Image 1 (cartoon, rainbow, N blue to C red):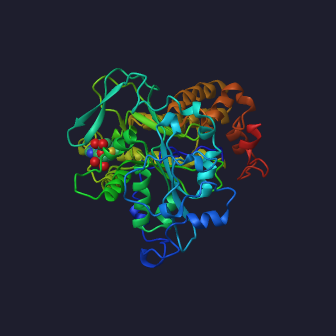
Image 2: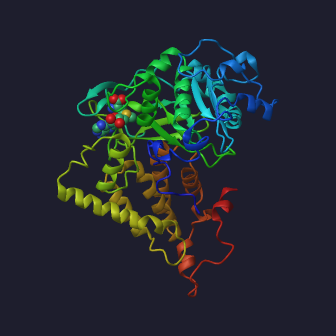
Image 3: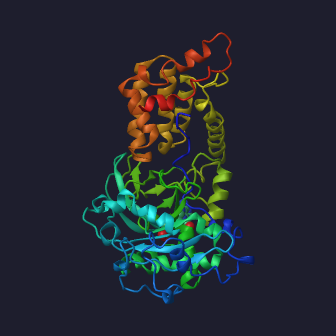
Length: 469
Ligand SMILES: C[S@@+](CC[C@H](N)C(=O)[O-])C[C@H]1O[C@@H](n2cnc3c(N)ncnc32)[C@H](O)[C@@H]1O
């Protein structure tokens, strides 16, 4: 209830959206029916006032062709330079189109594959309303600040990024706005052929330099493919999962998002950098989670790092097609078994800290143990969680000064990995200001000190809300 989840920023780096194939196909067996393709007419009929950007009918089925430079943004009062093609699922009746805004982020451009309703929602969010928010974020196509790393061929991994200078823990390494932002609904509602055409058009519509940048990304292997297949493979190898904007009315489908500069970072099970996405700037931020010395490769974990060796390797192999050769995965067997044992312990304790009943084993000592296990495991991106639990457990035990010490550490470690507006970070800031007024104050003492009452009394459940005001 206190809003802390152990892996909420560790979504998989990418999803094998192929797994979703076969559900909710447009028409039977994935074949397109007449009513399936070219949804633009339908959209306009549905709501002519909102969707002023309806395009000329004869252009709507164009697919595998290079981007046209024609800027049709004058067609309506909207940011989109392209709003085609579209496909409508005969089964769900959802229409999905490509929406490209080639002026986004100082003319870098961004392409969305989503429903017209969601595209319109995006235009009401801060990054679209205030162009100054995305002005100098991307430092790849047009650089104004010197880079801290360089791209190099890494034996056995393809390209990768190597630190050129010392990068202190907490430093910003890079940030990107999306190139492609694909509604998961596209994979669910449309047949493969259709969503692949949307993906290719989304890339083709971007400004030329940006488009080349994406086309140069890894497809994992070097097999010969058509343009459309190649783009699908680039998406599958390089996309991150992003949750919906908190105010987006469509909360049940997230996005599959490609950030080309960030995509050059290879995987390590114990990485030196971590990422989070901010909807306020529509930006993925990468920060160092420990000090990095010149010559070290910059790495991210593509998966939740708190998994045992076998599970990690299976997932990496299934989705990205490589055998993990990171230091942890190639350590001598006894060390790997010890690591797996620590992982199992960590996972066993996770639930305890969010359980505020007398059943919970949580205590300051248990939080100390988890912090120690995280440290031994070099899970630097997770340290803020352990510090958050330490702060809460010490406060819940009635030790405010120790609680404030850990809350400060949680904030310091949390900002680079979950962002300054994350609910855990904000909560720790409130605890620092006034531990006695925080909902956690004496919480375990009160619950455990009751006369055999197994559970806390009713009406005491919603501390998070009391605390917010
Ligand atoms: C997001 S890209 C990373 C950049 C990529 N190496 C490139 O050349 O653009 C993901 C792909 O990089 C390769 N890769 C990433 N991490 C790796 C690792 N630890 N070991 C081997 N290959 C890796 C795999 O081919 C994977 O599908």
